[in-house]
Length: 189
Image (cartoon, rainbow, N blue to C red):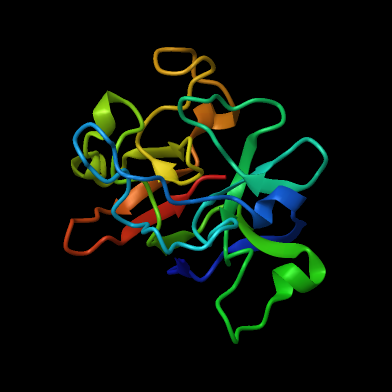
């Protein structure tokens, strides 16, 4: 979910890639130590791009989930904003994404609250990164398509940071805690 906190926000209606409706968001806990990969997602998290996840152009002027950190931002995976709504809405809700194949994407700044973001690193045995979310910290697209503090790199960890603005999508304005998993952000793209 993406909640707007500022008055000036620009969004645009983008056409979704076909695979944007089938994105699997939940990843099973680490089999070695049982640490959940993300505290903001559960096994009943719906498929399809989620409101608050990072949108990316796929090279055909369509948008899909951005998969940045540890997989690399490429010419066909360039972050362009945050999805405002889910591609697949809840039951009994208007389904504009499914009906029109279009979805709003927040772009060009604004302050938001997000309830889906990475709580654990995709590297180092899924160690918690919750303490890394402090005011002013740069946020990037994760391998899972959510905001994270992990740098996006061309060849995985330790590669060269690529993408416009060094891959920075947003900056933290409100730090989440384990008892209140809401992340405040200023959108940078």
